[in-house]
Length: 211
Ligand code: ATM
Image 1: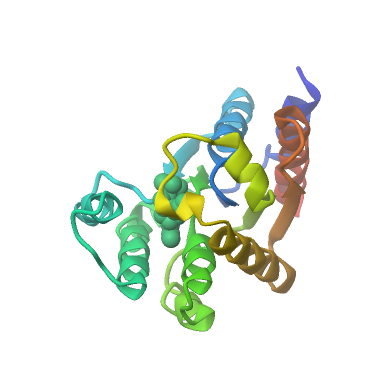
Image 2: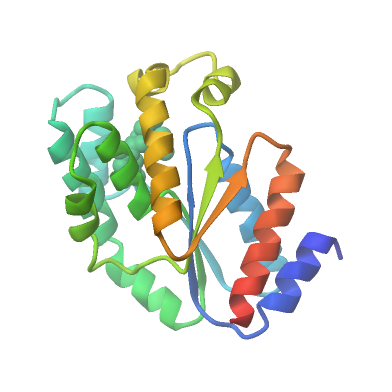
């Protein structure tokens, strides 16, 4: 058993349901870390469900996909309302799974709307308020990288957000502010190798289950 698996195994024997969100810029490793955490939890015999937002398979998700492809042009306010509604579509599922002891691991969640919305000039308090009736995360893990690291990791097929380094800088600042003001945040330097980051994630998730 690896050190990562031991940290998870020792920490999660209580079978408490948890909601864990990964946040960060594109190319920060959210999907990789979410999948590694899922694998470590499954190895420790936990029920795990991986969710990714936007969740494109719903009606609202399909509309978000159309908007991101430029089929429809919505204001930034409407876009964030769609992202938020897309999470409310999953509210019952999250509550039900958490109640039966599942660890829900999300690739993006509430803080994405605050970060991207705030970076586009929206009121972060409004973006927080409209999400208060969603299940709140037990832990939000910010995989922090600088915009130029994000850009260097993906040089092709970048969308218009990904090319706008100033916007990405504001997204990062919003995330860091939310982490500093929030209660259940962990900020990790995600410019490091994926194994180092995964070890920190496992240690934090293991600790969480003891408290
Ligand atoms: P993904 O690249 O993670 O699928 O997300 C698509 C875009 O949606 C992403 N933009 N870029 N780059 C971040 C943005 N987004 C929001 O603005 N608010 C949200 O709530 C979510 C989940 C995503």
